[in-house]
Length: 307
Ligand code: CP
Image (cartoon, rainbow, N blue to C red):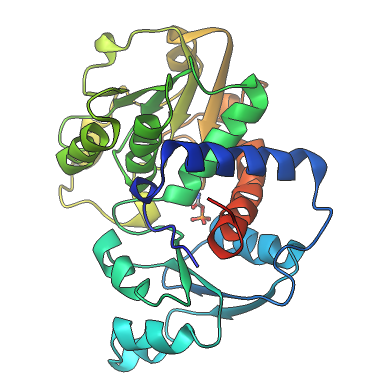
């Protein structure tokens, strides 16, 4: 059993293989049931439309049986430790897909059992399976990742952090993270990008839209209030002025083949205009589909996959 708690747990070739397998699931379906006889738990302490359902559906398509736990259904809520929970669930389950209010460090404690593969389905600081779905969407559309330039606009949230790490692990993939000042991807993530890549990467963090070196291959955005969590500054929206993706913003950084990505859910009219999200360049809905193919590729890798 192998955990997938952070993309930093993967070698570049492992990430490439998981993405390639997800592309395959997206085009060829599933011929066999590699998880037949396996048990997958899905434990979400926070709301989810895509990730929870796509892991459930994906695990079932791979032949696994699925048990789901709501936010208050495990004894964790009454004080049982994360370590004891992991030790017990490892005796019943092969994998546990988890969305928490905590950070990667807390999830690592849950992933301590050698008999249980723990998958991070979003923690406070990283959304690794989202980045795998994003890379899958790009790889399917462009037929490659090397040489692409992705402009990630908005809050430096868990999706942005995961994309930064994906950039560190994917040779030739250029990621520009454009955020309002004070809302950037954390410096600790950028330090990890340096560490993972030995300083050989094309991941850049900027706050001034004038510094974007366009045209880019993909413009990506995310909800500004991640998971609907209010920001400390009541006037935070003022900082995001000029960062909304409307047609003019999209065209400013686009060439003829540039696509638009959004991890969803969207707040239409805030971080993205309808004309972009629903426009012919939008891959957001295919990206949502690849949440499931990414989930399948991750579960297969964690439970029965080869190196
Ligand atoms: N993109 C994403 O993680 O969506 P959900 O919050 O609906 O799972």
